Length: 199
Image 1 (cartoon, rainbow, N blue to C red):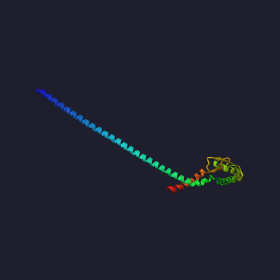
Image 2: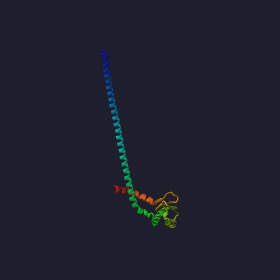
Image 3: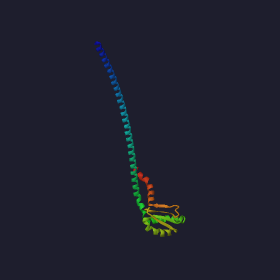
Image 4: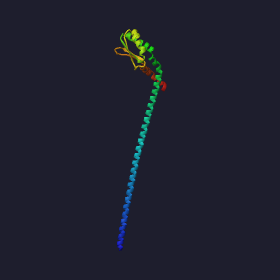
């Protein structure tokens, strides 16, 4: 009986010792695995954070660039608007003369005389439709008589003021419309206006 008890006790102690060793090995492995999992999770979290920081910085730089570009474009557009407004105000009084029938009669007569002086030829002139009543009799009677050749007049809604004149064959023409006058004077005024306004 003592031997049986001793054997049972020995088996129990060996089993307990072996179980304890296996438990400690399992616990040790679990701790190592947990450490590795935590380390990997920390590395992944840091990579995600690093990527998020980089994306946020890239987005900030892109937004700053877009804001700077939009600001520069808005400033340029504002400057151009101010410049155009000032030039238009400066040119407008002279351009208004191109809507005056008396003024147009004088200019057209001078230009037409130069055409006939070089080489007598029939002329065509395009005038503002708004001045047709005042200018049509002038062109058909007085102007034709002054230049000694036939002049064909047409009237256009597209011309607010001024005129276009040239040989009837359409080989070339001289244009002094309100729009061409404003564009021409505006181009000469633009650099000086820009310098005065914006340095």
